[in-house]
Image (cartoon, rainbow, N blue to C red; front, top):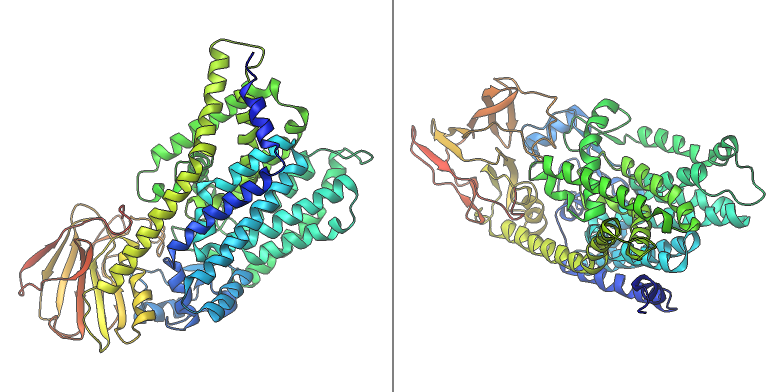
Length: 595
Protein backbone atom coordinates (compact mmCIF):
# COMPACT_ATOMS: atom_id res chain seq x y z
CA UNK A 1 0.00 0.00 0.00
CA UNK A 2 1.30 3.48 -0.87
CA UNK A 3 2.42 5.43 2.21
CA UNK A 4 0.18 8.22 3.47
CA UNK A 5 1.39 11.44 1.71
CA UNK A 6 1.66 13.38 5.00
CA UNK A 7 4.01 10.70 6.30
CA UNK A 8 6.33 11.20 3.34
CA UNK A 9 6.00 14.96 3.82
CA UNK A 10 6.95 14.61 7.49
CA UNK A 11 10.08 12.68 6.52
CA UNK A 12 11.10 15.47 4.14
CA UNK A 13 10.38 18.09 6.76
CA UNK A 14 12.47 16.18 9.27
CA UNK A 15 15.56 16.15 7.05
CA UNK A 16 18.59 17.47 9.01
CA UNK A 17 19.25 20.15 6.39
CA UNK A 18 15.68 21.39 6.08
CA UNK A 19 16.23 24.22 8.59
CA UNK A 20 19.18 25.56 6.57
CA UNK A 21 17.25 25.13 3.32
CA UNK A 22 14.43 27.34 4.64
CA UNK A 23 16.94 29.99 5.70
CA UNK A 24 18.46 29.95 2.20
CA UNK A 25 14.98 30.29 0.70
CA UNK A 26 14.22 33.19 3.02
CA UNK A 27 17.53 34.78 2.01
CA UNK A 28 16.73 34.38 -1.69
CA UNK A 29 13.26 35.88 -1.33
CA UNK A 30 14.46 38.77 0.81
CA UNK A 31 17.37 39.41 -1.56
CA UNK A 32 14.91 39.99 -4.38
CA UNK A 33 13.69 43.11 -2.58
CA UNK A 34 16.88 45.04 -3.38
CA UNK A 35 15.10 45.95 -6.62
CA UNK A 36 12.78 48.22 -4.63
CA UNK A 37 15.48 50.78 -3.95
CA UNK A 38 13.99 53.68 -2.01
CA UNK A 39 10.21 53.81 -1.76
CA UNK A 40 7.75 56.55 -0.66
CA UNK A 41 8.38 57.18 3.06
CA UNK A 42 12.08 56.36 2.60
CA UNK A 43 12.43 59.65 0.72
CA UNK A 44 10.56 61.51 3.46
CA UNK A 45 12.94 60.17 6.12
CA UNK A 46 15.92 61.18 4.00
CA UNK A 47 14.44 64.67 3.65
CA UNK A 48 13.99 64.85 7.41
CA UNK A 49 17.65 64.06 8.00
CA UNK A 50 18.65 66.66 5.41
CA UNK A 51 16.22 69.15 7.03
CA UNK A 52 14.62 69.85 3.68
CA UNK A 53 11.09 69.82 5.13
CA UNK A 54 9.97 72.60 7.51
CA UNK A 55 9.65 71.27 11.06
CA UNK A 56 11.74 68.14 10.37
CA UNK A 57 11.97 65.97 13.52
CA UNK A 58 15.33 65.12 15.14
CA UNK A 59 17.31 62.07 14.03
CA UNK A 60 16.18 59.97 17.00
CA UNK A 61 12.47 60.60 16.34
CA UNK A 62 12.06 60.35 12.56
CA UNK A 63 8.58 58.85 12.72
CA UNK A 64 7.21 61.99 14.37
CA UNK A 65 5.29 63.01 11.25
CA UNK A 66 2.88 65.44 12.93
CA UNK A 67 3.29 66.40 16.57
CA UNK A 68 -0.18 67.81 17.26
CA UNK A 69 0.98 71.41 17.79
CA UNK A 70 -1.62 73.56 15.95
CA UNK A 71 0.70 76.53 15.59
CA UNK A 72 3.51 74.48 14.05
CA UNK A 73 1.09 72.59 11.79
CA UNK A 74 -0.38 75.85 10.46
CA UNK A 75 3.13 77.12 9.76
CA UNK A 76 4.03 73.89 7.97
CA UNK A 77 0.83 74.00 5.90
CA UNK A 78 1.70 77.55 4.81
CA UNK A 79 5.24 76.61 3.77
CA UNK A 80 5.39 72.93 2.85
CA UNK A 81 3.57 70.18 1.02
CA UNK A 82 0.97 69.42 3.65
CA UNK A 83 -2.53 69.60 2.14
CA UNK A 84 -4.47 72.79 2.80
CA UNK A 85 -7.21 70.75 4.52
CA UNK A 86 -4.84 69.40 7.19
CA UNK A 87 -6.50 69.82 10.57
CA UNK A 88 -4.22 71.96 12.80
CA UNK A 89 -4.41 69.48 15.69
CA UNK A 90 -3.29 66.56 13.49
CA UNK A 91 -1.03 64.14 15.33
CA UNK A 92 0.78 61.08 13.99
CA UNK A 93 3.76 60.55 16.25
CA UNK A 94 5.10 56.98 16.27
CA UNK A 95 7.83 56.60 18.88
CA UNK A 96 10.49 54.35 17.32
CA UNK A 97 13.88 55.52 18.58
CA UNK A 98 15.81 52.37 17.65
CA UNK A 99 14.43 52.37 14.11
CA UNK A 100 15.16 56.10 13.79
CA UNK A 101 18.73 55.59 15.00
CA UNK A 102 19.28 52.68 12.60
CA UNK A 103 18.05 54.71 9.62
CA UNK A 104 20.30 57.58 10.69
CA UNK A 105 23.33 55.26 10.86
CA UNK A 106 22.48 53.75 7.49
CA UNK A 107 22.24 57.19 5.94
CA UNK A 108 25.64 58.10 7.43
CA UNK A 109 27.16 54.87 6.09
CA UNK A 110 25.41 54.48 2.74
CA UNK A 111 24.22 58.01 1.92
CA UNK A 112 21.68 57.76 -0.94
CA UNK A 113 22.70 54.27 -2.11
CA UNK A 114 19.78 51.98 -1.14
CA UNK A 115 21.67 48.67 -1.44
CA UNK A 116 23.32 49.00 1.98
CA UNK A 117 19.98 49.70 3.65
CA UNK A 118 18.49 46.62 1.98
CA UNK A 119 21.35 44.38 3.08
CA UNK A 120 20.61 45.35 6.69
CA UNK A 121 16.92 44.50 6.21
CA UNK A 122 17.77 41.16 4.58
CA UNK A 123 20.05 40.19 7.46
CA UNK A 124 17.38 41.13 10.00
CA UNK A 125 14.71 39.13 8.14
CA UNK A 126 16.80 35.97 7.86
CA UNK A 127 17.67 36.26 11.56
CA UNK A 128 13.96 36.61 12.37
CA UNK A 129 13.10 33.49 10.36
CA UNK A 130 15.82 31.57 12.21
CA UNK A 131 14.54 32.82 15.59
CA UNK A 132 10.96 31.90 14.69
CA UNK A 133 12.10 28.46 13.58
CA UNK A 134 13.87 27.83 16.89
CA UNK A 135 10.75 28.93 18.76
CA UNK A 136 8.58 26.55 16.72
CA UNK A 137 11.01 23.66 17.37
CA UNK A 138 10.69 24.32 21.08
CA UNK A 139 6.89 24.05 21.20
CA UNK A 140 5.97 21.76 18.27
CA UNK A 141 6.99 18.34 16.94
CA UNK A 142 9.88 18.53 14.49
CA UNK A 143 7.97 18.13 11.21
CA UNK A 144 5.22 20.54 12.22
CA UNK A 145 7.77 23.09 13.43
CA UNK A 146 9.67 22.80 10.15
CA UNK A 147 6.52 23.36 8.10
CA UNK A 148 5.51 26.32 10.30
CA UNK A 149 8.95 27.82 9.75
CA UNK A 150 8.61 27.37 5.99
CA UNK A 151 5.16 28.99 5.94
CA UNK A 152 6.46 31.90 8.03
CA UNK A 153 9.58 32.36 5.86
CA UNK A 154 7.81 32.48 2.47
CA UNK A 155 4.75 34.50 3.46
CA UNK A 156 4.15 37.20 0.85
CA UNK A 157 2.85 39.43 3.64
CA UNK A 158 6.46 39.74 4.86
CA UNK A 159 7.69 41.37 1.67
CA UNK A 160 7.25 44.93 2.92
CA UNK A 161 9.02 44.45 6.28
CA UNK A 162 11.83 42.64 4.47
CA UNK A 163 12.10 45.08 1.56
CA UNK A 164 10.63 48.47 2.40
CA UNK A 165 13.37 50.36 4.22
CA UNK A 166 10.98 52.58 6.19
CA UNK A 167 9.41 49.34 7.52
CA UNK A 168 12.61 48.15 9.22
CA UNK A 169 10.93 49.03 12.50
CA UNK A 170 8.82 45.84 12.16
CA UNK A 171 11.98 43.72 12.02
CA UNK A 172 13.61 45.64 14.85
CA UNK A 173 10.50 45.07 16.94
CA UNK A 174 9.97 41.41 16.06
CA UNK A 175 13.49 39.94 16.25
CA UNK A 176 14.34 40.79 19.88
CA UNK A 177 10.78 39.96 20.97
CA UNK A 178 10.93 36.47 19.44
CA UNK A 179 14.37 35.86 20.94
CA UNK A 180 13.12 37.10 24.30
CA UNK A 181 10.02 34.90 24.11
CA UNK A 182 12.17 31.84 23.44
CA UNK A 183 14.36 32.72 26.40
CA UNK A 184 11.30 33.15 28.60
CA UNK A 185 9.91 29.76 27.55
CA UNK A 186 13.23 28.12 28.31
CA UNK A 187 13.20 29.74 31.74
CA UNK A 188 9.63 28.57 32.41
CA UNK A 189 10.06 25.04 31.13
CA UNK A 190 13.70 24.25 31.97
CA UNK A 191 14.47 26.66 34.77
CA UNK A 192 17.12 28.42 32.65
CA UNK A 193 17.88 31.40 34.86
CA UNK A 194 19.19 33.83 32.22
CA UNK A 195 15.79 33.57 30.57
CA UNK A 196 14.28 35.39 33.55
CA UNK A 197 16.11 38.52 32.44
CA UNK A 198 16.60 37.99 28.70
CA UNK A 199 12.87 37.65 28.12
CA UNK A 200 11.92 41.11 29.44
CA UNK A 201 15.09 42.55 27.87
CA UNK A 202 14.04 41.28 24.44
CA UNK A 203 10.59 42.78 24.86
CA UNK A 204 12.06 46.10 25.98
CA UNK A 205 14.46 46.30 23.02
CA UNK A 206 11.63 45.40 20.66
CA UNK A 207 9.45 48.22 22.01
CA UNK A 208 12.29 50.65 21.32
CA UNK A 209 12.20 49.42 17.74
CA UNK A 210 8.48 50.09 17.35
CA UNK A 211 5.03 49.63 18.79
CA UNK A 212 4.65 46.43 16.72
CA UNK A 213 6.52 44.70 19.58
CA UNK A 214 3.26 44.83 21.53
CA UNK A 215 2.26 41.88 19.37
CA UNK A 216 5.10 39.92 20.94
CA UNK A 217 3.88 40.82 24.40
CA UNK A 218 0.53 39.32 23.35
CA UNK A 219 2.18 35.88 23.01
CA UNK A 220 3.85 36.28 26.36
CA UNK A 221 0.50 36.97 28.01
CA UNK A 222 -1.23 34.15 26.12
CA UNK A 223 1.48 31.68 27.13
CA UNK A 224 1.21 32.62 30.79
CA UNK A 225 -2.57 32.29 30.76
CA UNK A 226 -3.11 29.31 28.45
CA UNK A 227 0.26 27.64 27.91
CA UNK A 228 1.41 24.32 29.39
CA UNK A 229 2.32 24.23 33.08
CA UNK A 230 5.82 22.82 33.65
CA UNK A 231 6.15 20.00 36.21
CA UNK A 232 6.47 21.26 39.75
CA UNK A 233 4.82 24.62 39.08
CA UNK A 234 1.44 25.73 40.33
CA UNK A 235 -1.34 25.53 37.74
CA UNK A 236 -3.90 27.97 39.18
CA UNK A 237 -4.96 31.20 37.54
CA UNK A 238 -3.44 33.14 40.41
CA UNK A 239 -0.05 31.55 39.80
CA UNK A 240 -0.31 32.20 36.08
CA UNK A 241 -1.24 35.83 36.66
CA UNK A 242 1.69 36.24 39.04
CA UNK A 243 4.02 34.79 36.42
CA UNK A 244 2.72 37.39 33.95
CA UNK A 245 3.58 40.31 36.23
CA UNK A 246 6.67 41.28 34.22
CA UNK A 247 4.35 42.19 31.37
CA UNK A 248 2.93 44.90 33.61
CA UNK A 249 6.06 46.73 32.60
CA UNK A 250 4.03 47.53 29.50
CA UNK A 251 2.22 50.09 31.62
CA UNK A 252 5.55 51.85 32.02
CA UNK A 253 5.99 51.71 28.25
CA UNK A 254 2.57 53.25 27.62
CA UNK A 255 3.30 56.00 30.12
CA UNK A 256 6.68 56.71 28.51
CA UNK A 257 5.13 56.61 25.04
CA UNK A 258 2.59 59.26 26.00
CA UNK A 259 5.22 61.31 27.83
CA UNK A 260 7.27 61.35 24.63
CA UNK A 261 4.23 62.71 22.79
CA UNK A 262 3.44 59.47 20.96
CA UNK A 263 0.05 58.66 19.55
CA UNK A 264 -2.40 59.64 16.82
CA UNK A 265 -5.30 62.07 16.76
CA UNK A 266 -7.58 63.84 14.28
CA UNK A 267 -6.62 61.50 11.44
CA UNK A 268 -8.72 59.04 9.53
CA UNK A 269 -5.77 56.75 8.89
CA UNK A 270 -4.48 55.95 12.38
CA UNK A 271 -6.64 55.34 15.43
CA UNK A 272 -5.22 55.61 18.95
CA UNK A 273 -6.90 52.99 21.20
CA UNK A 274 -5.82 54.82 24.36
CA UNK A 275 -7.34 58.21 23.54
CA UNK A 276 -10.30 57.14 21.34
CA UNK A 277 -11.33 53.62 22.45
CA UNK A 278 -14.81 53.72 20.89
CA UNK A 279 -13.49 54.82 17.51
CA UNK A 280 -10.79 52.16 17.77
CA UNK A 281 -13.42 49.49 18.42
CA UNK A 282 -15.38 50.58 15.35
CA UNK A 283 -12.24 50.56 13.20
CA UNK A 284 -11.18 47.19 14.59
CA UNK A 285 -14.51 45.64 13.61
CA UNK A 286 -13.68 46.46 9.99
CA UNK A 287 -9.93 45.96 9.99
CA UNK A 288 -9.66 42.65 11.87
CA UNK A 289 -11.59 40.60 9.27
CA UNK A 290 -9.58 42.27 6.48
CA UNK A 291 -6.29 41.26 8.13
CA UNK A 292 -7.59 37.76 8.87
CA UNK A 293 -8.40 37.35 5.18
CA UNK A 294 -4.84 38.36 4.35
CA UNK A 295 -3.31 36.03 6.94
CA UNK A 296 -5.50 32.98 6.23
CA UNK A 297 -6.13 33.09 2.48
CA UNK A 298 -3.52 35.65 1.29
CA UNK A 299 -5.91 38.35 0.02
CA UNK A 300 -3.79 41.55 0.18
CA UNK A 301 -5.24 43.88 2.81
CA UNK A 302 -3.78 46.91 1.01
CA UNK A 303 -6.46 46.61 -1.66
CA UNK A 304 -9.14 47.44 0.92
CA UNK A 305 -7.81 51.02 0.99
CA UNK A 306 -8.61 51.51 -2.70
CA UNK A 307 -11.64 49.25 -3.20
CA UNK A 308 -14.93 48.80 -1.29
CA UNK A 309 -14.21 47.14 2.03
CA UNK A 310 -17.35 45.04 2.27
CA UNK A 311 -16.09 42.10 0.18
CA UNK A 312 -12.79 42.03 2.08
CA UNK A 313 -14.60 41.94 5.42
CA UNK A 314 -16.93 39.17 4.21
CA UNK A 315 -14.01 37.16 2.82
CA UNK A 316 -12.07 37.51 6.06
CA UNK A 317 -15.00 36.33 8.15
CA UNK A 318 -15.60 33.40 5.78
CA UNK A 319 -11.91 32.46 5.92
CA UNK A 320 -11.91 32.53 9.73
CA UNK A 321 -15.05 30.38 9.84
CA UNK A 322 -13.57 27.94 7.31
CA UNK A 323 -10.34 27.57 9.27
CA UNK A 324 -12.30 27.03 12.50
CA UNK A 325 -14.36 24.28 10.86
CA UNK A 326 -11.22 22.69 9.43
CA UNK A 327 -9.57 22.71 12.85
CA UNK A 328 -12.61 21.00 14.34
CA UNK A 329 -12.51 18.34 11.61
CA UNK A 330 -8.78 17.77 12.18
CA UNK A 331 -8.95 17.80 15.98
CA UNK A 332 -9.05 14.00 16.51
CA UNK A 333 -5.80 13.67 14.53
CA UNK A 334 -3.94 16.50 16.26
CA UNK A 335 -1.39 15.26 18.85
CA UNK A 336 -1.57 16.71 22.34
CA UNK A 337 1.73 18.57 21.97
CA UNK A 338 0.38 20.47 18.98
CA UNK A 339 -2.90 21.16 20.75
CA UNK A 340 -1.03 22.51 23.75
CA UNK A 341 1.03 24.84 21.57
CA UNK A 342 -2.00 26.13 19.66
CA UNK A 343 -3.86 26.84 22.91
CA UNK A 344 -1.61 29.82 23.44
CA UNK A 345 -0.18 30.54 19.99
CA UNK A 346 -3.59 31.15 18.39
CA UNK A 347 -4.91 33.41 21.19
CA UNK A 348 -1.53 35.17 21.09
CA UNK A 349 -1.96 35.75 17.35
CA UNK A 350 -5.46 37.17 17.87
CA UNK A 351 -4.16 39.50 20.58
CA UNK A 352 -1.29 40.47 18.25
CA UNK A 353 -3.86 41.39 15.60
CA UNK A 354 -5.53 43.72 18.10
CA UNK A 355 -2.27 45.56 18.72
CA UNK A 356 -1.92 46.54 15.05
CA UNK A 357 -5.48 47.54 14.18
CA UNK A 358 -4.79 51.22 14.76
CA UNK A 359 -2.93 51.60 11.45
CA UNK A 360 -3.86 51.35 7.78
CA UNK A 361 -4.80 47.74 6.97
CA UNK A 362 -1.89 46.16 5.15
CA UNK A 363 0.09 42.95 4.94
CA UNK A 364 3.07 44.63 6.63
CA UNK A 365 1.13 44.41 9.92
CA UNK A 366 1.08 40.59 9.89
CA UNK A 367 4.71 39.93 10.80
CA UNK A 368 4.06 39.14 14.49
CA UNK A 369 0.49 37.80 14.12
CA UNK A 370 1.95 35.24 11.68
CA UNK A 371 4.09 33.89 14.52
CA UNK A 372 0.92 32.16 15.70
CA UNK A 373 -0.86 31.79 12.37
CA UNK A 374 2.00 29.85 10.73
CA UNK A 375 1.91 27.00 13.31
CA UNK A 376 -1.89 26.82 13.01
CA UNK A 377 -1.67 26.50 9.24
CA UNK A 378 1.09 23.89 9.55
CA UNK A 379 -1.00 21.75 11.89
CA UNK A 380 -4.09 22.01 9.67
CA UNK A 381 -2.09 21.16 6.57
CA UNK A 382 -0.38 18.09 8.02
CA UNK A 383 -3.36 16.69 9.95
CA UNK A 384 -5.91 17.70 7.36
CA UNK A 385 -4.15 15.85 4.53
CA UNK A 386 -3.99 12.66 6.57
CA UNK A 387 -6.40 9.97 5.32
CA UNK A 388 -7.60 9.21 8.84
CA UNK A 389 -9.93 6.42 9.89
CA UNK A 390 -13.05 7.92 8.28
CA UNK A 391 -14.00 8.27 4.61
CA UNK A 392 -16.72 10.02 2.70
CA UNK A 393 -17.60 13.68 2.04
CA UNK A 394 -16.36 14.87 5.46
CA UNK A 395 -12.92 13.36 4.84
CA UNK A 396 -12.80 14.78 1.31
CA UNK A 397 -13.79 18.21 2.57
CA UNK A 398 -11.09 18.12 5.24
CA UNK A 399 -8.41 17.10 2.78
CA UNK A 400 -9.59 19.64 0.21
CA UNK A 401 -9.41 22.43 2.81
CA UNK A 402 -5.92 21.38 3.88
CA UNK A 403 -4.84 21.08 0.26
CA UNK A 404 -6.09 24.60 -0.44
CA UNK A 405 -4.03 25.95 2.47
CA UNK A 406 -1.01 24.05 1.18
CA UNK A 407 -1.36 25.54 -2.29
CA UNK A 408 -1.81 29.09 -0.95
CA UNK A 409 0.78 29.11 1.83
CA UNK A 410 3.45 26.71 0.52
CA UNK A 411 3.23 26.26 -3.24
CA UNK A 412 2.16 29.76 -4.28
CA UNK A 413 3.53 31.83 -1.39
CA UNK A 414 7.12 32.20 -2.71
CA UNK A 415 5.77 33.17 -6.13
CA UNK A 416 3.41 35.69 -4.52
CA UNK A 417 6.36 37.10 -2.54
CA UNK A 418 8.32 37.60 -5.76
CA UNK A 419 5.32 39.03 -7.61
CA UNK A 420 4.67 41.45 -4.76
CA UNK A 421 8.33 42.48 -4.89
CA UNK A 422 8.23 42.97 -8.65
CA UNK A 423 4.98 44.96 -8.44
CA UNK A 424 6.33 47.23 -5.70
CA UNK A 425 9.61 47.74 -7.58
CA UNK A 426 7.66 48.68 -10.70
CA UNK A 427 5.57 51.17 -8.72
CA UNK A 428 8.73 52.58 -7.13
CA UNK A 429 10.29 53.23 -10.54
CA UNK A 430 7.06 54.77 -11.88
CA UNK A 431 6.89 56.98 -8.79
CA UNK A 432 10.44 58.20 -9.33
CA UNK A 433 9.70 58.82 -13.00
CA UNK A 434 6.66 60.88 -12.01
CA UNK A 435 8.80 63.15 -9.86
CA UNK A 436 11.59 63.50 -12.41
CA UNK A 437 9.27 64.05 -15.37
CA UNK A 438 6.92 66.53 -13.69
CA UNK A 439 6.53 69.56 -15.95
CA UNK A 440 7.95 72.06 -13.48
CA UNK A 441 10.65 73.58 -15.62
CA UNK A 442 14.14 74.66 -14.71
CA UNK A 443 15.02 76.55 -11.51
CA UNK A 444 14.77 79.17 -10.03
CA UNK A 445 12.41 77.96 -7.35
CA UNK A 446 8.81 77.51 -8.41
CA UNK A 447 5.55 77.56 -6.52
CA UNK A 448 3.86 74.33 -7.61
CA UNK A 449 0.10 73.78 -7.36
CA UNK A 450 -1.45 70.37 -8.08
CA UNK A 451 -4.99 71.05 -9.24
CA UNK A 452 -6.01 67.36 -9.33
CA UNK A 453 -3.89 64.31 -8.55
CA UNK A 454 -5.48 61.56 -6.47
CA UNK A 455 -2.67 58.99 -6.23
CA UNK A 456 -0.36 59.74 -3.27
CA UNK A 457 2.61 58.66 -5.40
CA UNK A 458 1.73 61.46 -7.81
CA UNK A 459 0.76 64.07 -5.23
CA UNK A 460 2.20 63.59 -1.73
CA UNK A 461 5.59 62.02 -2.37
CA UNK A 462 7.10 63.50 -5.57
CA UNK A 463 8.13 66.66 -3.73
CA UNK A 464 10.47 64.58 -1.52
CA UNK A 465 12.40 63.23 -4.52
CA UNK A 466 12.50 66.66 -6.15
CA UNK A 467 13.75 68.25 -2.92
CA UNK A 468 16.53 65.65 -2.57
CA UNK A 469 17.67 65.69 -6.18
CA UNK A 470 17.09 69.35 -7.05
CA UNK A 471 16.75 71.47 -3.88
CA UNK A 472 16.37 74.71 -5.87
CA UNK A 473 13.60 73.45 -8.16
CA UNK A 474 10.60 74.27 -5.96
CA UNK A 475 9.92 76.68 -3.11
CA UNK A 476 6.49 75.33 -2.19
CA UNK A 477 4.23 72.40 -3.08
CA UNK A 478 0.44 72.71 -2.76
CA UNK A 479 -2.06 69.88 -3.31
CA UNK A 480 -5.41 71.45 -4.14
CA UNK A 481 -7.37 68.23 -4.61
CA UNK A 482 -6.70 64.51 -4.20
CA UNK A 483 -10.28 63.55 -5.02
CA UNK A 484 -10.71 60.60 -7.37
CA UNK A 485 -12.95 62.37 -9.89
CA UNK A 486 -13.17 64.58 -12.95
CA UNK A 487 -12.49 68.21 -11.98
CA UNK A 488 -13.68 71.44 -13.54
CA UNK A 489 -11.35 74.43 -13.34
CA UNK A 490 -12.95 77.80 -14.13
CA UNK A 491 -10.77 80.89 -14.38
CA UNK A 492 -12.39 83.80 -12.54
CA UNK A 493 -9.64 86.41 -12.85
CA UNK A 494 -5.99 86.97 -13.83
CA UNK A 495 -4.77 85.18 -10.70
CA UNK A 496 -7.84 83.24 -9.56
CA UNK A 497 -9.93 80.23 -10.46
CA UNK A 498 -12.46 77.82 -8.97
CA UNK A 499 -11.95 74.07 -8.72
CA UNK A 500 -14.74 71.53 -8.28
CA UNK A 501 -14.85 67.72 -8.46
CA UNK A 502 -17.74 66.41 -10.54
CA UNK A 503 -20.20 64.01 -8.97
CA UNK A 504 -18.68 63.72 -5.51
CA UNK A 505 -17.25 65.62 -2.59
CA UNK A 506 -13.65 66.06 -1.55
CA UNK A 507 -12.04 64.43 1.51
CA UNK A 508 -13.46 60.93 1.13
CA UNK A 509 -10.37 58.95 0.07
CA UNK A 510 -8.03 57.09 2.41
CA UNK A 511 -5.15 59.52 1.88
CA UNK A 512 -7.37 62.59 2.04
CA UNK A 513 -8.74 61.58 5.45
CA UNK A 514 -5.22 60.81 6.63
CA UNK A 515 -4.81 64.56 7.14
CA UNK A 516 -8.29 65.29 8.41
CA UNK A 517 -10.60 62.78 10.08
CA UNK A 518 -14.25 62.68 8.93
CA UNK A 519 -15.17 63.86 12.44
CA UNK A 520 -13.71 67.32 11.59
CA UNK A 521 -16.10 68.84 9.03
CA UNK A 522 -15.29 71.95 7.01
CA UNK A 523 -17.69 74.90 6.81
CA UNK A 524 -18.24 77.25 3.86
CA UNK A 525 -15.80 80.14 4.03
CA UNK A 526 -12.97 78.06 5.55
CA UNK A 527 -9.81 79.76 4.33
CA UNK A 528 -6.15 78.78 4.26
CA UNK A 529 -3.00 80.57 3.13
CA UNK A 530 -0.53 78.26 1.42
CA UNK A 531 2.43 78.91 -0.88
CA UNK A 532 1.42 82.55 -1.13
CA UNK A 533 -2.06 81.58 -2.35
CA UNK A 534 -5.43 81.90 -0.69
CA UNK A 535 -7.58 78.77 -0.76
CA UNK A 536 -11.21 79.28 0.26
CA UNK A 537 -13.96 76.66 0.54
CA UNK A 538 -16.93 78.05 -1.39
CA UNK A 539 -19.40 75.15 -1.16
CA UNK A 540 -19.72 72.06 1.03
CA UNK A 541 -21.90 68.99 1.33
CA UNK A 542 -22.13 67.17 4.66
CA UNK A 543 -19.03 69.00 5.87
CA UNK A 544 -16.96 68.09 2.78
CA UNK A 545 -15.91 70.66 0.17
CA UNK A 546 -17.47 70.56 -3.29
CA UNK A 547 -16.02 73.78 -4.72
CA UNK A 548 -12.88 75.80 -3.97
CA UNK A 549 -11.95 79.37 -4.77
CA UNK A 550 -8.21 79.85 -5.23
CA UNK A 551 -6.24 83.05 -5.71
CA UNK A 552 -2.55 82.44 -6.39
CA UNK A 553 -1.57 86.01 -5.60
CA UNK A 554 0.02 86.50 -9.04
CA UNK A 555 -1.14 86.04 -12.64
CA UNK A 556 -1.46 82.41 -13.61
CA UNK A 557 1.00 83.09 -16.45
CA UNK A 558 3.70 84.16 -13.95
CA UNK A 559 6.86 82.10 -14.69
CA UNK A 560 7.31 81.49 -10.96
CA UNK A 561 3.98 79.61 -10.83
CA UNK A 562 3.31 76.07 -12.03
CA UNK A 563 -0.22 74.61 -12.18
CA UNK A 564 -0.19 70.83 -12.66
CA UNK A 565 -2.70 68.00 -12.97
CA UNK A 566 -2.26 64.25 -13.32
CA UNK A 567 -2.96 63.26 -16.92
CA UNK A 568 -1.83 60.37 -19.12
CA UNK A 569 0.70 59.05 -16.62
CA UNK A 570 2.41 62.35 -15.93
CA UNK A 571 2.13 65.54 -13.87
CA UNK A 572 1.44 67.90 -16.75
CA UNK A 573 0.90 71.62 -16.90
CA UNK A 574 -2.72 72.70 -17.10
CA UNK A 575 -3.60 74.61 -20.26
CA UNK A 576 -4.64 77.93 -18.76
CA UNK A 577 -8.11 79.07 -19.90
CA UNK A 578 -9.13 82.65 -20.52
CA UNK A 579 -11.01 84.48 -17.78
CA UNK A 580 -14.56 83.15 -17.62
CA UNK A 581 -13.71 79.89 -19.42
CA UNK A 582 -13.58 76.34 -18.02
CA UNK A 583 -11.29 73.39 -18.60
CA UNK A 584 -12.00 69.81 -17.55
CA UNK A 585 -9.33 67.75 -15.81
CA UNK A 586 -10.25 64.07 -16.35
CA UNK A 587 -9.30 61.47 -13.77
CA UNK A 588 -6.95 58.62 -14.61
CA UNK A 589 -5.27 56.04 -12.33
CA UNK A 590 -1.91 56.95 -10.87
CA UNK A 591 1.28 54.87 -10.46
CA UNK A 592 -0.36 52.45 -8.02
CA UNK A 593 -3.16 51.73 -10.49
CA UNK A 594 -5.91 52.24 -7.92
CA UNK A 595 -5.89 55.83 -6.66
